[in-house]
Amino acid sequence: MRPLIYAWPGNEALAAVLARELSAEIGQWTMRRFPDGETYVRLLSAPADRHVVLACGLQQPDDKCISVYFAASTARELGARSVGLVTPYLAYMRQDARFNPGEAVASRTFARWLSGCVDWLATLDPHLHRHASLSEIYSVPTVVASSTAAISRWIVANVADPLVVGPDAESVQWVSAVAAAAACPYVVLQKTRHGDASVAIEIPRIADAWRTRTPVLVDDIISTARTLATAVSHLRAAGMPAPVCIGVHALFRADALQALQAAGARQIVTCNSIAHATSAIDVLPDVARAAQDLFIKTVAPDTRAGV
Ligand code: R5P
Image (cartoon, rainbow, N blue to C red; front, side, top):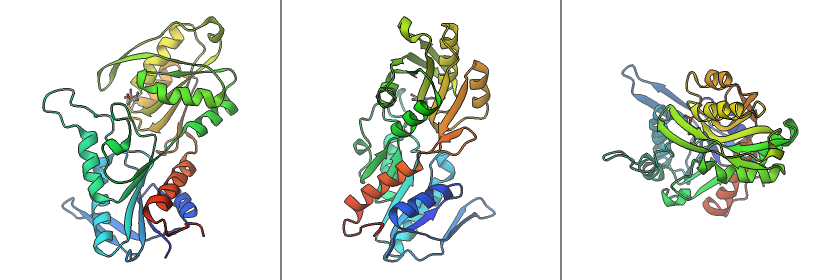
């Protein structure tokens, strides 16, 4: 039987591309709040003897985790052969250490919980900084799609003479790959974070030959946008052309977009791992292909999706 996808509200585009890639059926289910605020979930399409895929981007995760848990548990209780989660944005990856005594290391705790909830996980560019890979913290099979190819294609098509700029040390992993694919140079800035919405950034000396290029800042997450806004201000103060800003995951806290515009960004675009007004780079096919790859190799090697 074809795999069965349950899609969360707002994940219809993801479900459609997954359905094509996995040759799956989009199932019916319902979720609502009881008057007391508790969550009700009902799987209307029967999951018995099916491979089940939950399509749910985990931005604002606290609103979604209980319904993911109820849907996954119910699918298992009702005889699903496997339950996977496809989330283009994987939450709780940034608190990846105990910086102060008593803090929850959310990345590990969340991974332990989610690994008990589903049998496999597919995502795109999780924030891997102090963890080298998802397998360090997730005990179920995981696959990571990359936005590098889609971002570099966008840069080549839209920016003449780009200089890719990473805002902080951990960005070197993606800016080096994006710059190589776009055949342009890159530089990496230095960031010190002082608080949730407070960062300091230093700019290294930029070679004279690169100073007339258009800076293209690339960050994996835009949340408060203080990282990119501060970087934009410094690049402008250093006499560089107005930067283009690219974010993979568009979390955008309430005032973030305005802050970034006010800093002097020439253009702000993001990938559609989280749908947003700035979404201009389609990465959902990359996510779906990665999910299909994991599904066929690890979850259901006896199944050839699409056949
Ligand atoms: C952090 O290390 C990430 O790579 C991003 O730079 C960060 O999450 C961006 O956050 P914000 O938009 O709040 O500055």
